[in-house]
Length: 96
Length: 357
Image 1 (cartoon, chains in turn blue, cyan):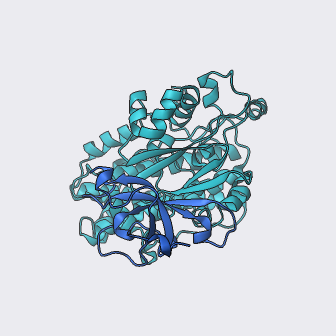
Image 2 (spheres, each protein chain N blue to C red; image 1 turned 60 degrees about the vertical axis):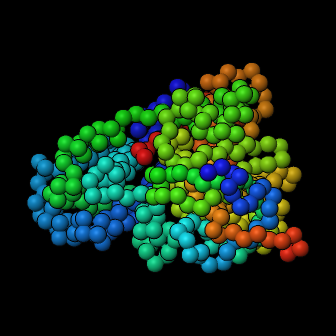
């Protein structure tokens, strides 16, 4: 599967689901759930047979401003790998 | 390859026994509570091995049939005793790899199954780790007792697998031999090449594993590799907040602090403060810190900045400036002067170990 089959592209604003989606991938850490970020990298569907059976949804690295996740004032960023099933798009006017 | 090394836990002299013992304590509890015991419980739940198999195997065990050799300390001084504990830990970890092989019939687990079983997604399943207190001497005595106990469970588990005919002794012995074969550590060599060869660096940053394959670096199959480059404006740091994902096939053994909850929790909340407090690394305000949380199929390592004043150094010398911490972003590559000071003081850089897949 190539990047063109993925729903999001680099720069798209997204929000992470708050609860576990009904699908199969549990690998989204608590601290980004319900948080807003921007698609930083698009990886697509990755095979990793030693790690898991079958395939997961397309994978992205989502960029979060540190200030969106913690009360730390530094202008740093946290980049987290999140699968498509956990993401929804965020319209431009919903940002801030 | 200059990064080649054996499984010796370290070379040269130790300077901080306490730090070595802390690392053994942390690692030992990690491998017991996160690798071996969750695996045994998983197999018990499925009836592949039962508690009663373990009891019977223990009762039938005779010295002559033991799979693992009994370890003995080589010397009585403090350094020899610390080394003995480190080497024993190393054998224990290899023993866990032995019984985690997917080639052992009936034990077809993937890493994901382990993560569920050991409670990476759900605290309910977590096995409590032991806490360590006391003087250095007391902690060493406790560690020896723990290693003895944990090794016994491992031995009994192997015996039970053979008794239930999930694996033959011959198969296990062959695998045990493979686990002791030397494996090169490639991290520093890769970085030195990237510093001196712009074309390779470009390939490394854009194609990851493909570039390493062409370089002939041994690699396991552990997902997509992404190399992130430190620059004047960006400093990268890697973590896995869910478990402890790490490109160990390239970087070698995971440093104990990388698996520690304090690092995992705090690096994504106050990265600058963690770098300063835990690693004495202070970064200029104009450099953005980017923390990469490898929560899924991508494995990361950092391409550190080439230190100033190294324009004339050949690749082999440059490789000596690359530390494990610098590949995770918890440190910088060494300046040549630091390196020669350390060498002058009689210290030899500890080479990381590459533990089996």
